Length: 294
Image (cartoon, rainbow, N blue to C red):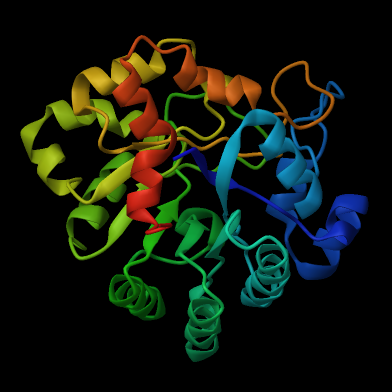
């Protein structure tokens, strides 16, 4: 059936050309900080057009990809980014799918934009990060968006930060206990907790946590930049394979890479000590089912 990457990003060409200027004009300073070169000059963020994404997918043997939105700080940026992603996806039907950016500060207008996304064939909401976007988990407009996601059968993807991980520019804490409580309070919504959920899967060895996170899955996005080899086997030993989805965070740059590539991210799963059925489930089966791509 082919590999599915559930976590890639695309940004407008003007954002890639001059991220600092583009973000400054839109009040998106956190994003500008995160994509800027590190103090030592090392680049983490790469850039790609939709056509370049498809080229790299073909080279890596990836059949389909879900283009995630971003946890923008302004509603207006969410709307503009959704409009841009809609064009990218429509140019590559059957290969690219989309999750919608969202900010509850837009109120009814934000929900209207989600409805436009639904009508355009989007398949989810995300990537979200209330802590970075500046709203509370109990925001009424946010609750309305979650209800809409449940109605549509859309997964909602959250950026999750490992609380023990090193600091980096633009980093924001996403308290794991808050996530456990929040996900457990919305059993009607399917959540994807990105970046291995900040290692939340290991807490599922606690029966109460496992019950609260019964409706949560985890993607592998940016894994080789954060964790050592063996992370896949370790997580599988606790929760099995049903809740793990391959994600790369493309076009983020692996260490030592000058241009975006999928290979180091795929290797996290391909080289894992799991059987072929488990590998295929993680690399594509779970995402196809969760996003209803077939």
